Image: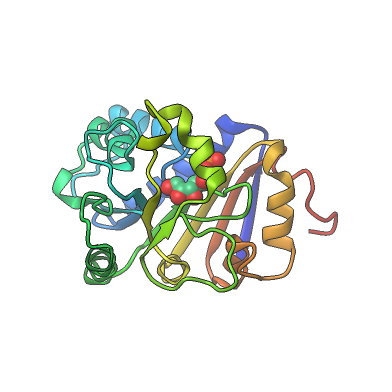
Length: 246
Ligand code: F6R
């Protein structure tokens, strides 16, 4: 089942998403949260931190697994997703760093690392709720449009456009990672619940395509239509192009 919550703006979207994640943490204090990076969830993390500071949330038993990481970046590189997660969430709440997991971008053996990560998620009992953002082309994690759905955690080659877009964050184009490790579509679909956050008019077309169009690997997020417990929290602008009867 797919439930869509429409919010007035980004702030409300962030509060609603944080509400859903905190409900999970309160109901199951040792839950496994699947987490995402990118600009969309930053407000959600800020809201969780605020509630933690107020004493309403306790992360001491929470475990986390992140969707993806650039291959080749060290943890102290400020563009790594490891760094991002510490900056926006882990260093700001009482989570045990030993309970947080991000694919290890410094492991050169891609197959070994992806296999380890997939097994780790299984050994944790699976993901209770997976937070996702939505790429402009419908990607989730680093699962880009393709001719088939990738099942497990795997290594992907970044597209030229992604490398180009990321260039500004690095000293030179040479330093931009060329590959990433990402959960597969199958890994994501195994999560018990999915929470996707999306905002802004620039995502309105892809929201309509992904959630109201045909299920196809050319739009990776469209597979979520087949998951039995999906919540989409989107602002009005992001929902501005969905079919009227929806
Ligand atoms: C993040 C991730 C990506 C982003 C997506 C949207 O870990 O895997 O799929 O969720 O690119 O990014 P933003 O939120 O920056 O628009």
